[in-house]
Image 1 (cartoon, rainbow, N blue to C red):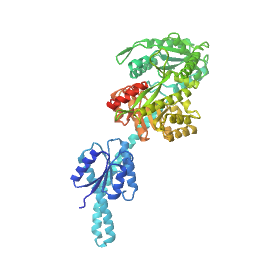
Image 2: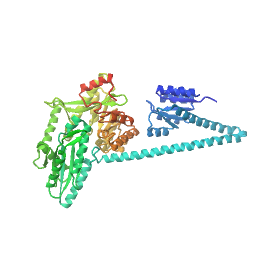
Image 3: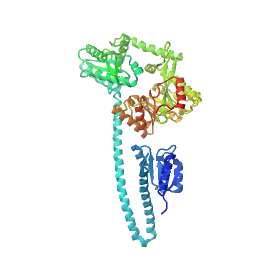
Length: 627
């Protein structure tokens, strides 16, 4: 009997050596290729009886290699068994769709490999035998009866294998159905997140505005009043800075529960971001009702909080606006309550204040803040801090996110510019500030390239207002040219609000940036209206999972399921995925096991000055960051 030939296509020498030795020991002839291109050439040349194909290889992966083999007349009938280190159902389905006949998961039992190889070799031999017998039927009429008997036996065996194969396909179909259900549930969860806060489960700003609109309509019909309470926790940033965001998030969830306990029938509460909450209160007995609820909120928050064995004291500043005296729509009432809240802070915090026309101090304060931003830009008081983005498989830094800081006179430590961004957006200052950030970040990246880290990338957040500038693409190109950087060294992080503006101009701009080689990522994915539609329509390269979901890994089943779904969705759409806010080894292990191979967060490093980031780069040369 002629020796059967097996072609092994695998870029891992250890796997090739083991399989070759074992299969040759059992009487097979073995040929080896180290990548997909070489494997296709060998298959065309030697016409093996079976191909063992690694699914995950650089350049041309196993799935594409299999599709090309099946497209060729010479190799289309050679059975292909996939080998992969992942048991993910989507990979198995991709293998069968590409034309594979079987799927082996690494590390595999060598006896199982032999058994499956033998089965498919037998089937291959039977297929060849059938072809030869069909030829003999045409040439040897005299032995037709004998050939027909042999064919019947072969068909009986084939029938048995078809039944077996049908059962296997039924199992695959069942798995696909389960996967579709899970994806539908994930989509429903993402739609839910468009109207509810991911951390507390309270309505978010979008749903709040809708509810306020309904409450205004009710109050108008019944000639009653409506109060809006704008609640901002005092000094909450100190909790995050001293105890970490995980403790801060747990405190916010407890605060949300206490606020719900302060509600009356018909009242509603929402979290609109950070440490800010809003209560909507239909009034029956005039504005005094709102004062009673406001004091009830202050008293509830004044009680001791115990979070992760930390005893915390929390107070709040509350601004109150009343319909119709202070506004006749949700936006004006929110703005008035926000102004009154800032006045409450100026009055010493831990109190409530009603909005009055005299509260122009808050507006003046915002104007003063805008002037400070202008002066900071003129006097070069801004600086950038950099937070490393880590390749989880190697533990090395592959990119850095540039974050804006303000050096105030009299302060040794620069402060985050997060609280200023809204004012910068409103005044348009975000455009020159954003250009400064891009230019400074690219200059710093070029310095690191020259220092010996040429593959390092830089990630910069992009404001919707910047994106709408008519000369934005030219400005990006000019900055890259001035710094001497290739476009593929830059990663622009977009907000979902940019993508939801589905104009032809937006699509064209994103396509132009992508065609330049710039990577486009969606920042804080899952906190807005995360739709599959824009992921398919826009040239997006990567998703950044919001830290609020990452923080719930292993503790909150919904967050854990959502993170899993986002990763699977990104993989199915061939998108990279990076997790933000990673703070524990448990989170790292979960992310790696589910295929998310990039992360950033306090577990590795906070955002640091450029010289400290340089030290991180140098330290990784001798000591890889913890994995």
